[in-house]
Length: 301
Image (cartoon, rainbow, N blue to C red):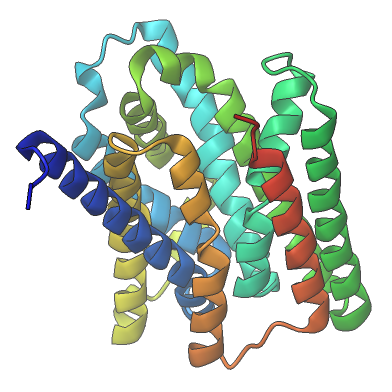
């Protein structure tokens, strides 16, 4: 019996650790909308946005140490407006949407990001037009429109605005991904993310500070504090660092595949904790979105 050379064994162990990190990150991300829904009755959306970004931003800045990169002053300032787009506005829309919609819808609509990203990259001429992949974008967008329209008919205006905010959240984050590509290619994802999260802690203050100042922090139940700790240290800091670790070892396409575990995790958690079950409209929309993303992401060898 012959064993693999040590280098191959070591590489195999590294891949297993990376895949484990990816799975853990998706579990943590998938549970966060459910935890957020439990926290929102005690912390309004603006206060939760400020708490999440205000605490996780400095922590990620210190963890990634972006000041060690070779970014010049202009590039650091570019990260400031990218932060407004991809962190502050993105998170504000997500949490505002979550407060009006459901965790399951938040997870399903989040899967639109690869399709939006392709559409924006083609519009900005970063990628070539591909009819097959554009068909995937159309399928996914039909799924999103179906979900938004079905919710409007079934649950009223508040749910409609929540779903629209979640769609806008994914659109803004897709713009962030496309517009940050040159900096990421030059300096790496850790440096760009470190600076954007560092800026976000300052930029979120005008939006969140008034809400933060009126919260009775001493009167919050212990369960709410536990939820906030999960959102900040788990769904923000730990989950990002787990994804970043995995990206050093496996391809971005592998990371993208694992992202689609999130709606499954969210659905299971929402069913257990909140008693929510996806209706046939949500399942139909999810099938269209997943099919569209699959067609968009698949590339011929």
